Length: 491
Image: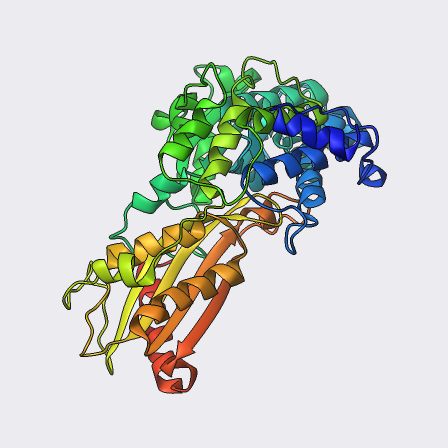
């Protein structure tokens, strides 16, 4: 399909995943990569963006590579991983265990994994714990337990099926007396939900990066772990408690609708319904965009390129839900009018939730939560914003809720953290005009769900304007205020 034909198809609300002429990225993954890259371009156009602008030019190939890396489990076999990883253990008898003494329970705890939710294509975080009882006078290399778990995590998943697949794969491949798998999973929430949750509570992403996420715990067991009178299951979960897992057996599992909030969305008969709703709700795009139908078809083509079946019942509504998520970050020509919106929200000197600190006329609002979408990988990043500003007796303070709305406004776009920090600082400074300092701390899903998988890492950025640029003491006081709240939250 030529470029002209492709654009014509988009205008008519069609997307053809079969790409013949455009072979961008084939060296890194063949025609499937080219198909995914073209699908991402459709999504960017649907968001009102220009895929050729600086910052987005390489986004299609980055997103395609992220999806391919994040679903590499479809192209891996457990047998290839486990084969040759068995070791004889003299302490074993022909019965159950005895690898570490009577009982023989072997546990690998706190395996950090990421997977893609099959209901919405958003990554979710996993802490995996695996236990098994050796048999046949052999044990398996401990690293193989983690690698087998990763094979199934790197597929489109939901928590219980993931636990079941890991458990059954280990049972079939190493043939122990029993296997038990426990998963703790966290799913990012919808941006509008993140905006509203627990705004009165201190939050610090580097110490509690999963706060505000939907959490569920699931288990799966085989063999001796399923026996009612066996102590193996109790021993397994006791050892998890030793590592601080706090695995609550009485509260494991949750419905797919409560686990993935987007799952509760009704897929409309006409996929253009959401586009009409967005227009009615004030999302007026700066340029003509492709139809919602084409965006949904583009996502379906991505799923197909990953090796999955978009018609599988669990995936039928997934393209629609993913597009619904993306539309929260669509480019709009509606902007905050600094002399309208913000000034109308300015109140008298009022402490907001106890977070205003008045030291040398410095006000601060700390731990304003946000969620944004990385424009490089189309993956969420989330965290907190701290805003400090000089108080001016001739002007009144901006209340916390107004600052939170401003943070939410600038976050709900395709963003990079550095730009988001600067935009918030400029918006506050344009109203107050004396001195503003913004510190933004974030966890980037692209740092942990892609090849580098740097679990636990966080990023901090600072923007300084006005008096904060020259007043070293003021900067130190504001940073100290952030530090005090961080210390109060704890690890």
